[in-house]
Image 1 (cartoon, rainbow, N blue to C red):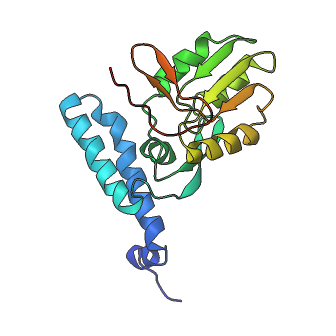
Image 2: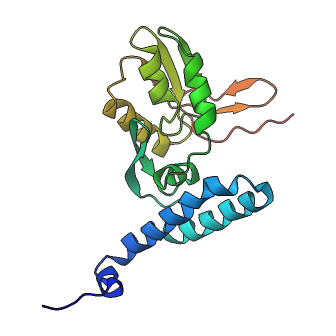
Amino acid sequence: MTHVFADEQDLRVPPVARTEAAIRTLHSVIPLTAMQPEFSAEYVRFVRRVRESLHPRGSHDVRRAWDGDFQFEVDLGSQLDCDLYYGFFHHAAARALFLAVLRPCDVVVDIDANVGLYSVPAAVRVGPGGAVHAFAQTPTELALLTRNVQLHEVHECVRLHAVQVRICKGITVTPGGSLTPYVSAR
């Protein structure tokens, strides 16, 4: 019988999996840093820099992430999606409040739907008698949003829009499915 030391056993785990486990540990500390705001912001930046060495922004690596009762396909090349994948969703309290005020048959407009972190739970909350208008800003977001809507079977009340929306003294919509950035001359 051979004895396997913990360090030797860890070497059997692929390097990417070990790195992802270390990043999850770093992410688990983030809520504890909230008590010291001057440290918290710097720590979050540090964790994201470490994480981006494995998942650079703009790269495309689609994975599944859980957020409470919801599972989402996310792109680890996106900062928000990568945060969610590693268990850090800093909008959780705001989203919980938002969802708490929704009632069946309400109409919701999500102008930066990303992968559906608000749209999908909102669709579940408003039900088939309501409507959620989800605006995807990029083709990648639209593809992931579409898959997440299908995954949660809420397509009957989610209306997907491939339209980039920017707020500049009101709401400006670039129609026709154009996903080019809007620049205001004002």
